Length: 456
Image (cartoon, rainbow, N blue to C red; front, top):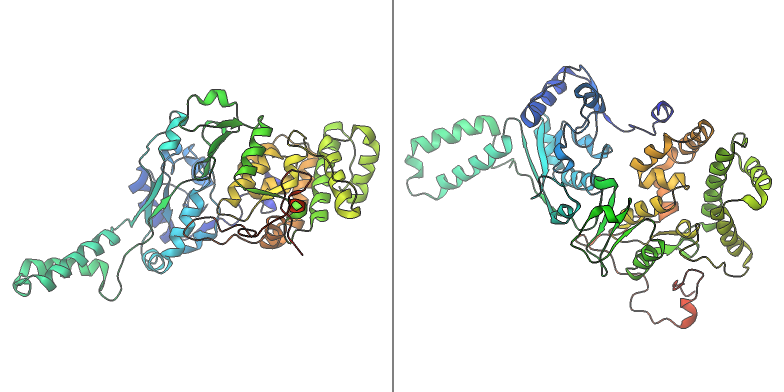
């Protein structure tokens, strides 16, 4: 893992905490949340204030996430909004924290100038001992205040001011006036600079959780289902009609299709399908070479073509399937017949532009794990787990590739692979591009079933 850390591919964009004043503020918040304090003089924190160094110190990397259910957080600066979320137990947690910071940035900037802000992503479930408990999580409420209770004190002062203005004898109430003056010494002038935090409640509809080996929960779609990374039989009874695991490829493909969640790369608007397919094929060859102990050299495309020639008829089925798709893209040959049972099928898809695009791409990354670039971008937890088991040659190739091709332009790489960021309308998915347009039977013909092709 040292190679990934050195290249900024692991623990990248963490916020350094180096000054004694910030360490002291962090300890006050940490003491309030957990009853513990760190003895470290400097460390790094993620968007939630979790520090891997402190996790090592405590021998507890869930010290801010008891039971992996109600994530606690410590904000020292609004710059944390750009940091990653480490040890994520729910796919929605980072988005909720980032949105909370962005929508309260001015207030948080003012509050963190003098104190740490501590809080919790609170829901009505306090433990998830059985998988069925996950379905009780419907709404996440962000509860936050400074360690000096500035927000609560400001709310109290605001209520007192309202009493002072509206009560008939408010001008003569010495006790009320004295209490207002005392609170104002802590909060400042809340009439000119109100201390309030907004947008503190967020619905949790579709999400991924790391609990029970990994489960994708899709409730807010036309045809709901849960998809388990492990054997579905181990989950027990769930309050949802359809439950699949990764071995149910046909059922998952049908689920993605009938909910209009995916599109083939070759018909995706703005995608350079040939370049994307070629790179996926390179990743598959790197894995094949590593598995057979073949020398792929530096992993250049010329050297990988040599690996393909050595393998000949033994080429992986994923490679053969993508090669057939690439021939269709570049030469206009016959449609390749790739069904959902084919090992290459999920490598040919990406999520459509909708509110749960990142969640669907995360699922596709797990269904097509040899595409290490998509795995790194969309499912870092699985990437890091997989990386530990790779050969040294594959580790070096992947780390060098990601540093060279992804780190330099992350936004550009994501746009090229997955399209522009989807527009959001109160958290709902946008209308499909072709909604309301009549199509004829030719529009519905494609190598993967009902694939809509835009009219020119």
